[in-house]
Length: 459
Ligand SMILES: Nc1nc2c(ncn2[C@@H]2O[C@H](COP(=O)(O)OP(=O)(O)OP(=O)(O)O)[C@@H](O)[C@H]2O)c(=O)[nH]1
Ligand SMILES: [Mg+2]
Image (cartoon, rainbow, N blue to C red; front, side, top):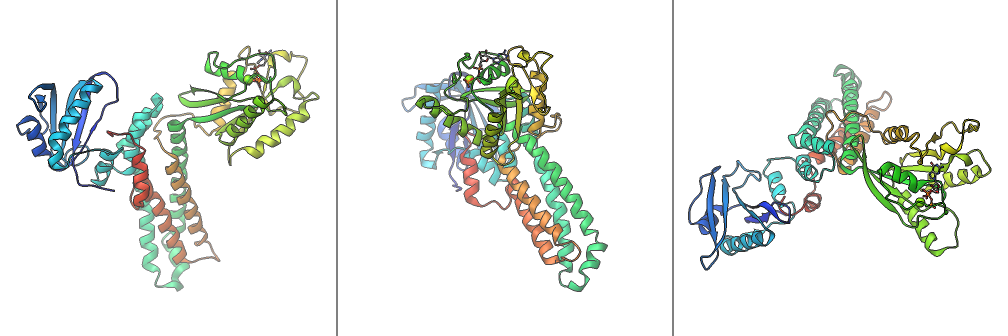
């Protein structure tokens, strides 16, 4: 997946801007620079230069900076051209560079290729490379800070510390593997079990922090589901603070999914309002309801909304039925919040018997909405503080989950009656492999290509 050619791409976003940056990285940069500007550039100095086309006509006056390997983003020689930021102009500059760089193998970069080279040249590890993409894609202040921390290496450092502790434990274990009769004695003398417990609790803490980090990065898919006319669209509008969805007293108003993204305490939420769930002979409504179920099946959190007036009334039986159906459709570990709407219609004289679990709100008056927001954060496991939060991806959490289950297995092989140092050590090794995949050590090549190809061009 690596090619030893010089690569070029526009590094800034498409569109008009004051400045547009083109980046070239790789071998042969000296002759390419000479060809472009008829002079050699000293590293790390700004140079105001003129770029001309084949006929000698000026294309742009620009600032060029040369970074000599390995002191550059990619670890290779890098030439950065700060041009005027017009899309057409940048295309002309690119064309001219490719024309003059052709003899030296200059080609257009693939998505993520600059970051990939930085990674392959050990300038950053994989988690840091991902953090660059996350920093650029961050949708909230907290996500920016989290990605910046990951990019500085906060996440990688924790991972590397864990790997180091497991390594120490493995060294201990593997050095005694040849003396099986001493297994129990070894475990006790080396405090191996205690050390394993410490590693496990550190891993657990890191997993929790990574889960928060994923919420920061991706946000929560929050699905509003329930029978028709209970106020799902009204709740969406209330949470969004504007009239995003149509609200009418007619049951079956919402036919399609309506999405709106908001943040609650800095946490991104993608709210999906759905068609009310009921049996219907209306073809359009039935299609909408199908989509409601699809949304439920993909949710991170479902709010099961009902009319609070019906919770203890004759329709509550239907509510139970629907609840069971929703529970069945939910993804594994997806929490569900039961909420009763239209509390304003209840009046004081009408307490709801036997449904103390249900949160009461009024989408109309705003009553209970603050409490609902806090419940939402709590049910997705948001810890409240963004202090020290890093940004993480599902890939990281999967690796941490697998590492954790290997450590549990190794604990099993250290327990009285089951002791097998060989299996104990093997599970430690497997846990370590999983952690190594996060920072990119021990990552299969095809996976590496997949991760970087999701970056955009110029990164
Ligand atoms: N009194 C009162 N009325 C409400 C409240 N929330 C919604 N309504 C009313 O209930 C009716 C239905 O509201 P919607 O938000 O359209 O309900 P929905 O669940 O989206 O309905 P469908 O799209 O048909 O599934 C409308 O007339 C709303 O004004 C509330 O908190 N209190
Ligand atoms: Mg609706």
